[in-house]
Image 1 (tube, rainbow, N blue to C red):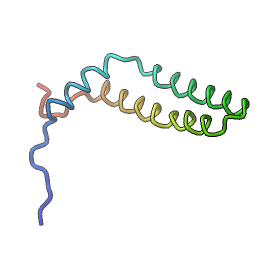
Image 2: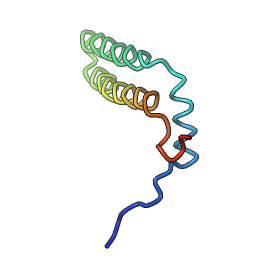
Image 3: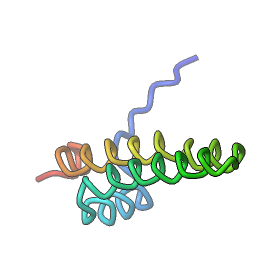
Length: 83
């Protein structure tokens, strides 16, 4: 079976998401992650273990979104759309 994708262009949804996320400064995601860790620590100190774990898990997705944001700004849409 051949699973190679010969159509390498981005779809309209991906293009729209990239266009909107490129407008956000990259440090928004960094500060969101730091904020989530701070709130998590506050919950932990207050004895709310489950809330601390829930909010603490937000840091990694915020950082991943920051990486995605940076890649979109550096690379933009795929090479087929540049011209």
